[in-house]
Length: 373
Image 1 (tube, rainbow, N blue to C red):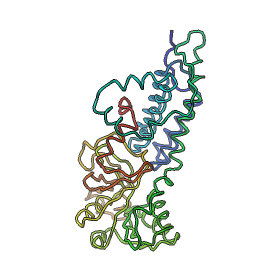
Image 2 (image 1 turned 90 degrees about the vertical axis):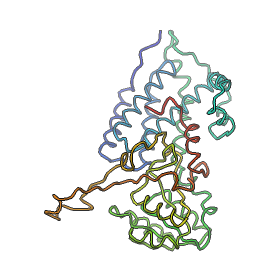
Image 3 (image 1 turned 45 degrees about the vertical axis):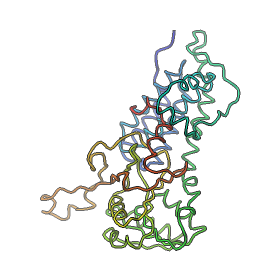
Image 4 (image 1 turned 120 degrees about the horizontal axis):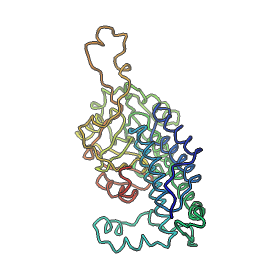
């Protein structure tokens, strides 16, 4: 008889609650940092978990993932990372149990399976371990035998996710010189570390100029301009109000993303919609640099402001304005929603993709059962 489904161990539970607290207080901010913290917590949960079949392990991880996502729904990469880990765990389990699930899925004739078989990707590579692990689920004599046999393989799978996150900047930037040509004028805004790494990598073999918009009221563009200038890149800092005026001189717009949705749209730093709309009017290509861990199986079902995060309005209109504060409502959106029709290409750590391919990539990266944690 199988044991009742248990939650994470006491030590793992403390780690989960610590991360929940950090997410709620916005002590962990940014897509990659949130994803890294999530992987480290999940690795600890799996290493200490007690389970006698795969369903119990999946239930434990899903419960932890739901807790983390509810703590900060705006950090979409937390949920993406949980889904990615679950996908790898099921994959390793299917491989360890002689691939019975994989063989049965090939006999199911659906459009999604047809697409997946016609577009083999890195998720379909052969497993690392050639030897098949002997698995016995719900063993009454030794309930922990299943977890002991499977854990080493699962830890390798989680390490793969961690390695992907740690090398994402390098992998996104490796083909930068193919996208940026000599004497081009590039427009960017905000301070995306992915875009920063991309531009610096291209500067090793190309000479170009970067125009950085200030991106008020956070003015993160100042940090970006300073960093690019110190790397020897010709850089100009301009106010956001100049974006449309200078767009006719710009060859390419390169921006980052906070989250990329299943329809090919994305959430990006406020001001991105302004830049993307101006670029579309001038037929200027819009390139988005982002790791594949930002692909989110969600759709923007609301109006343009329905799912965005809002920052402190005092940076736009402070209380020192006195009587004016009582007469106006100030909105300070932190992210813009940029529709797929405004984006030309996504440059990821797994190649370049048009917005129309995002749904297929999400289908390959996550299991359908995990879209709702």
